[in-house]
Image (cartoon, rainbow, N blue to C red):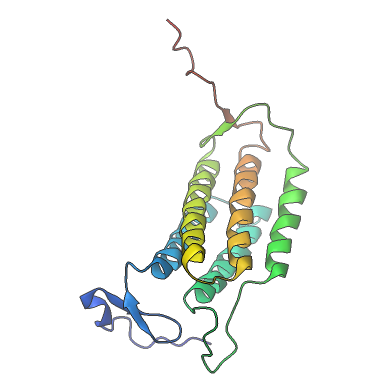
Length: 192
């Protein structure tokens, strides 16, 4: 279990931070960018979750996802192959599989799309679309890291599935797709 007794350490004042193995790196290192963007995605999901009622099934799903994203951050902050003296926390195939099951179950409630969907509709849906976009950025940062260093492939899969889950959740939050705002190519009513 984590125990935080002091919030500031001053070690970051020079633009440096420590990874999970206690090695030091720049705050702009691609690994820090990857897990930092995962943290941003987690915050965006928390904001979306705050727009939902605790009794809503999406509320519970997103709570599990937020916990998973802490696991993912722990995974990314410890380079592969490092022997830290404890069993490293890594995102698992079971976590990815759970997301796939949730996507399938939620998507079965929706009608098929006949257009792309604009981010919007209800407040909860708009927030979920924002979380989806931030998650896609986290995925891009993580795949950039994976191009340079070894990264747990389940971490990349998790982020990919999570953005899909958030899209489906946004449609559910939009009155099960009935409140979706559809894209009109060329703009709505802008014909001259």
